[in-house]
Image (cartoon, rainbow, N blue to C red; front, top):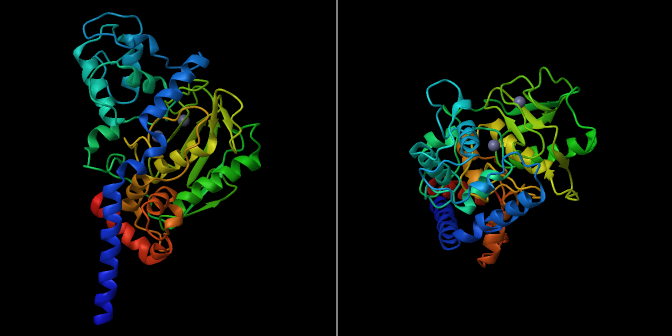
Length: 364
Ligand SMILES: [Zn+2]
Ligand SMILES: [Zn+2]
């Protein structure tokens, strides 16, 4: 009895310590990819690459009520990602070039979802983010999810998930890349799946049979028959479907790279996008926290593969914890703890995993 009480007190202690750290160092947890950093990188991208599909830079500071060429394209972009309803004619092609009240509301919602200051105006940071390459999955699920005080993760409508301990995955034999090599692509996906498997009680197994695998990975170009055509270099990078569909498609027109081979100005890190899309395959929607893997945009030549507390909290709430969940799988949190002066050894082991889980569920 006394022993049990001691254990409980210890666990409570862990919870309190981690809570205080989370409370005291919230900025550190998202310090790697702040919106400012995004802005700088994405702006450079627009300057160096006119191949970017959605370059709205000429729309910066366009005012409500004005009529400017390009506004209709912006409306189509916002319509595509769930922010603007069509005008009732049944076709999004009929959008006008007038900056109207509906567009202002859509911009406000976009800013809210992507963690920007909500102004309803086309300021530089908003336009830059809209011009940045992004995931093709619509943000509609973010709009209906509501926002928790601190958590920014979301789910698809109805919160679909898999009910299996092991998910098989396979690569399409017909829709694949010449470069990077098959071996490199497989290695990248093994690492990406491994990150999610380290925090939830689900394992991933590669199989040869594409048709029967739970998760189907392929590289497609342009219109490929699922109503979500790809758009060439940059723009939309990839999309995945909610459980239990299992399909994930990558735009074959991108300059996909592995192992930080960022020579090209339009290079896109395959591992970063794969880690993000696997989040969708598991049932996570987009997060409005810029540092999260599940944030919708990813500038070229950027590596973003470490799961953040926000990503982990989201997926834990769907699947529960991996019994062997350790701080090692949370590099970001580990850094915060180290900088906060808390001994890593003191916090290692399974007890920590469960204490951490309690914190995540209570506070995120
Ligand atoms: Zn996405
Ligand atoms: Zn597709």
